[in-house]
Length: 353
Ligand code: TXA
Ligand code: MG
Image 1 (cartoon, rainbow, N blue to C red):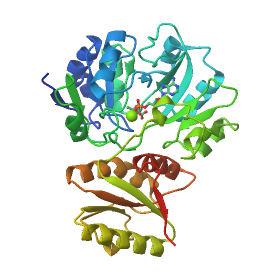
Image 2: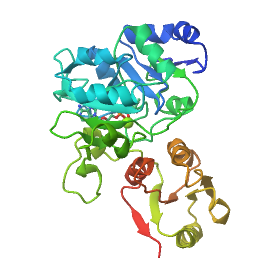
Image 3: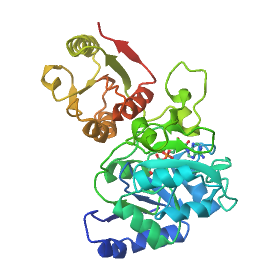
Image 4: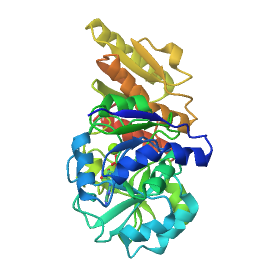
């Protein structure tokens, strides 16, 4: 299949975006696949209520069929087209954080095919803020099921070139809207149980959700690597975001971390291995490796989030064998950064003394 790339800058006038998006919207309406930018990561979209179309998404990504898709809507009221008994909490969260990087799980209506929900009786819904994503939903006249537009197991795409790497020849079109601002997938909140629960941490933090829903908690299944509890979001159990090289996180005080990573780097380079290092602004010049990448200033979590997946992909393309990364734990966006980094590392963390 020939994959067309259609460039649409997100800062164009709304009417112009609506005009330019038409060829992509037509493909969605006809049951085809289009990758498109959102504020979090690129999505791989299809008509959510068309079973045959949704099936194609799983095939293009190599995604297990029990891993449900998020349905993207352009107006809050569309949630009632796919959700049953939508709770008041959904409206409250929407007023606070939609459009934006937040996904809510509610009970599904029978109109939503089980292909889209991976066999579940619940459905994930998100109202994105990206103008190109919103135009695509509106112009197609569809609700759009879209997982991240990567091959299953690879880091999520934050640039069109990442999507081209993974999806060329497999889908009809890629809409290139430049880089994704947030760079990590949306926060997922489950509203179907007694208490609201975060199933995947993201840019909208626990504290932010608690401002609206004070009894919100984090799914214990996603916190500990040794947890016997399975995570509630099916996708969170898979090894994910994995670069080809072996990644290890080194945690501890700055001085100790720099020393430890340099020791390890020297050891592996002696063995002829190519070493990649994820450094921060402050430590960048103190590392010795084959490829030392600056992920941003330690205090600037938004920047670190934006750069993470792209850096992991770059290591792949440079044939790096082993990667060492500093640690970024915090109660805010750092929680989401570490969740993705830990998964990429298969939970391998070394303590630097
Ligand atoms: O930011 C995002 O959410 C991006 C953009 C494209 O919107 N999408 C995204 O989709 O990250 P995906 O498919 O890569 O991740 C969806 C996650 C998976 O972990 C899946 O298991 C979970 O959401 N999920 C979807 N529906 C669910 C449901 N009904 N119950 C529990 N988890 C669900
Ligand atoms: Mg994904």
